[in-house]
Length: 541
Image 1 (tube, rainbow, N blue to C red):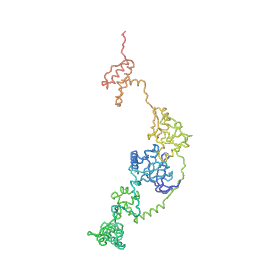
Image 2 (image 1 turned 180 degrees about the vertical axis):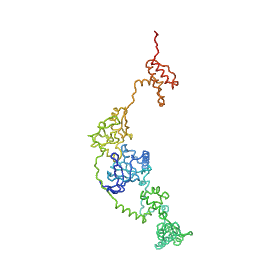
Image 3 (image 1 turned 120 degrees about the vertical axis):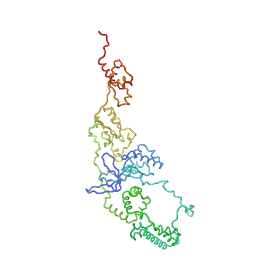
Image 4 (image 1 turned 90 degrees about the vertical axis):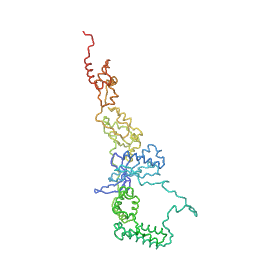
């Protein structure tokens, strides 16, 4: 579909090689140059958050499995577990604006349903779920407040319907509290007259109260405040407690200390607190916990919720609702995006592969890519191939796996990075490693792992004489001691002299090892002189 509406979950493309971004459209605005921008809510994948938060997410998932008492996740094959992680998202409160022309399609995102099968998320195309809220600034994960609690732990057990004529043996006084007697001795006119008296007492009590006079400076505002439900509830409760005796109830309204003043949350809140609440409601919606934490920490959660439902009965709420409706009428409700048919820069043209260098070894890229399998599904046949991973790795995906990568942000099959399997092109890379002058494999995995490029290839070659000296001069070389003390120099001249003597069949007088620690250089100099000018051992002529 090419039409996209408000509240749609869509794919956004910000990079030709990276997976799509998943966003929810909140607003569609037309810019000055005629382009359409979408104000969206951000969703994050597992690959977008840190490893420490992934550990917390996995712990939360295990706790949910224990609560659900559903062994389905344990019974899933490793491949389905791997793919199920690609369907998990993390909701955020972050908003951003993106060009509408970057939309690439629709998807569906829902809150994780405890009663739904996990396989159902895999069976539906373009379907995702979330259960945690991610804060990109604070780098935290929190449980979403919108959880629907379903099951025997949260729903009441409904008793069987009583048959006709059957008595209910339960004690009703223990199940409920009566606050009003419908069959009382008063008529409606007497009750209405008592309520008028109660409102008058409330107006007079506000005139005597200094704080109420500041908040309600005019008489009609005080009378309107006294006519609110809190005053009427107090009046009817007083009448019920005095057994519907009007004279006793009036006396209870005006006790010895003065008239009783009843105020609700609308009167308790100041104008500045009301403005803060409206600002928080605009930002967080009906997330009262976040409103309390970030805007009104000195108010209780009960007070904030009670104020919200009273605020909805005021003219202020009606005016704001009308303004928002007028703004919504002026804004776009949908946008038409033509199908995106431009070729992806990552497409591989098999007939025209440019030669390249793999890890500085001089191996042609055409040879490296010829006959290579898909990094995800191992297939070698596809109508279109896409380059994937770092360029020096020469990895590629088939068309089906490329679409999966763009939508779900991973490969269909676990890679060797996940500790599940070797790569599909391991044999090819072992062959390449034999051609490298390092004597070290360039890459032996099908995973997108970066390999360091070297400026110049080299390797250390030891001569036969050096390998022989390691055995003949073990008492001078002391390889274990040298390995533990790499910063101490090794006297190669003394080792060379000893090796030459041993090869000639003669031996040099040696002192114990502990006496040769710092005098080897002088000894080797004398030995070299002795070898260059050997004494005449023949008979003098």
